[in-house]
Amino acid sequence: MHSLNKRQLALAAAVVTVIGTGGTLWHHGSEVRAAPAVTPPTVKFKPALQRSLSDTQDYTGRLEAVDVVDVRPKVPGTLLAVHFKDGQRVRQGDPLFTIDPAPYETQVRQAQGNVAMAEERQRHARLEQARGQRLIESNAIARREFDALDNAAREAAAALKAAQATLAYAQLQLSYTKVQAPIAGRVSRAEITVGNVVGAGGEAAVLTRIVSDTKLFASFNVDEQSYLRLIAPSLRAGARPTVKVGLANETTFPYPAVIETLDNQMDTRSGTVRVRARIDNVGPEMLPGLQARVRLQGGLSYNAVVVDDDAVSTDQDRKYVLVVNGENKVERRFVELGTTHGKERVLRSGVPAGAKVVVDGAFRAPPGTVVTAIAADGGRS
Image (tube, rainbow, N blue to C red; front, side):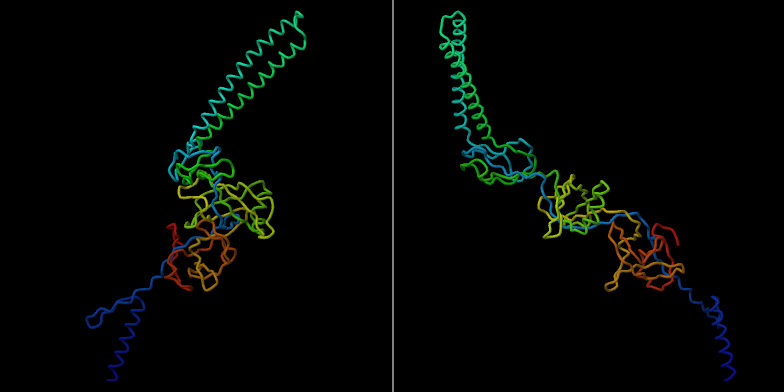
């Protein structure tokens, strides 16, 4: 029994030796295979890059129309017709409303008659003036009589001009009965319906409102520190900061804009300065009054290390990325974040340029794991 145990121990040691060397052992007609070697998990990485960048800051603002016009009647009268549909796009000069023209047509005809009479008086006065001129030259009439004829001719000419001015005014009033679009844009609803009597002038009720929709302003307020950091250096360099705009439901900033106006003083109560950026390529869904997300980029350029923003993770209140070191081991590097630029994130500290930042497979490789690192573009570490 003792000798049998020795033989069994020797046989077991031989099996261990063979398995440890990756060999195969036959024992009593059975094949014993060695366990396969463990393969390191595979992760994909992107190198941290160094770029020349300038800072950005995000703000919340509002979209505003470049042009807004409240359409009011210029002459009083009864509203006869509305020539547009609510929300319709109109061109400058398109008809919007018609006010009853009959009273103004009557004034025009009356003024035309007055002009005709004034022209006849002027013709007669000129004939008398010419006759008096011939008589005065032959001393047939007194100088006083000629002066009276000459004065009558001048008065007739002045009366004609007055009658013509009255006619022009009457025609202008008549033209105001056709209310036209003063600008191109999108018209609101008709605030007053057909059959109502409307007044005239600045105190009159608004007929409708037109807002331009081919261009919009994004209006937002910039705090003092951001102004000094982003806008002031650009202005000193003779340039304007870059502005991009997005809507409240968008995660990107698809609409480029140009700073149109910058207020001439800082509001001391809020510590901000108002900025308006013009958007030239307006989307059909963009309306004045919508909330706007504004990204302002400017200031002095600097070299920064950037990584994919998706590679940044959070451990409680600390941010970190996973990198593959020179021994192909995964390390956790705590970082200080900077601003985002598209899908990239600036790292102010923690990772040098060229570090292999894990972008895929991190769940398979916790810190300390030996891995096979493959570049995300297809290359191997």
